[in-house]
Image (tube, rainbow, N blue to C red):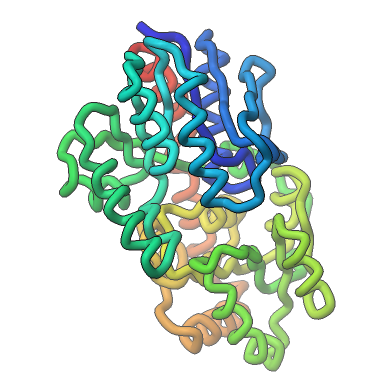
Length: 349
């Protein structure tokens, strides 16, 4: 039984996938596992909670170019791994860093926690190369491979019938925090993200119609660049913590997701937990929990999204059943129980 668990991470940021990994690392550490996160130097910058029992180690030189930084990390990582460690990889790059450690005569156990179809992040030749690397990693039979949700599980099962299922879900505070907002003063909340798959261009194309119909919009982001770009035309907030984010969500009636591809996506579910109705472009992961017309709406075009939002705003007071179903959906799974069960499993390997 190994109690030394190492998380190789390419950055410790404010990304939702990072939050999930930190919650798992915290749980393992709090259960007595010697838990260490290893990341490239200069990439540790997060508002998420990290237990004092989790050790953070930054390695290598600070490199601005992402591909060069990833390559350097892959080469250096094996020197920080010891025999009998359990390595909890979460991205195909960190999977190969873990695999390299094993190839260099390290007797390690590998857990590969898949939160997205990762080659979709790229384009052109890099995407073709990444797809080959990802498909090999998904089929690797000498690691404990875990899909983060049923959508990914069903897509990856054809690659490897030994893949296990985990249910990523929202932090319980999005369910249990009491609302202090008596009035939802904004019609729409939108999360500004720079990732091309988030399709911020769709949001920009919708803005003239939304303005014309007096739809009030609140934006949240973690990007200073995006905040500066949009703050002249929209109220944009950078929440410092979950409580601030919850307070902002509670000011709004409807949530919009414009992504073209998502492995899961926490924001729609976080908003549903607060009684905010999601309008989501068809993109994969969110269709696990959104039932079109029952607890939210799935759309396919910019016109359909715009018209759906306007109709919901005009009829908002009559949508109590949809709001209640959205809240009920968010309460279906206890994420803390899922995390605890996974932590126990890792510690027993």
